[in-house]
Length: 142
Ligand SMILES: [Zn+2]
Image 1 (spheres, rainbow, N blue to C red):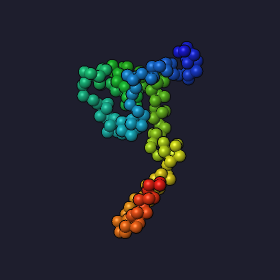
Image 2: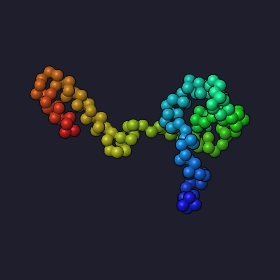
Image 3: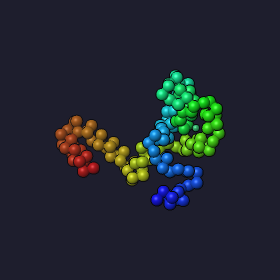
Image 4: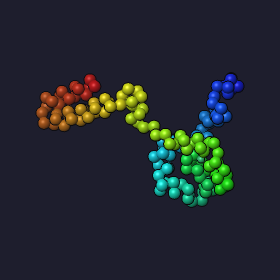
């Protein structure tokens, strides 16, 4: 079972089962892109207070990989590795957005328009009861 799987994965991914483990899971890429890579956030993450719960007291953190290292040497070596470089490349790609996911399932723009129309109808409806009735039906069928 496991043996067969190995022959089908990409070479660089040495252990697919490891990647699926919860304790191996790190921060999501889009979270890193939107928050951690901002200069002030990066500054904060790279200069964390000493924390005994974290590896290396939380003093050697790789922002891109969201990982703590035991020593400064370990962190510096990690930065030169393939794992880190691949991560950098992944982070250069635009983050996965809600708009993108809506487009993927065929919603996207039209969906947004419906919402806007509904809002306009409701506004008009404030003035006359008939229109309010119409807009109510429109939103129900939509
Ligand atoms: Zn890294």
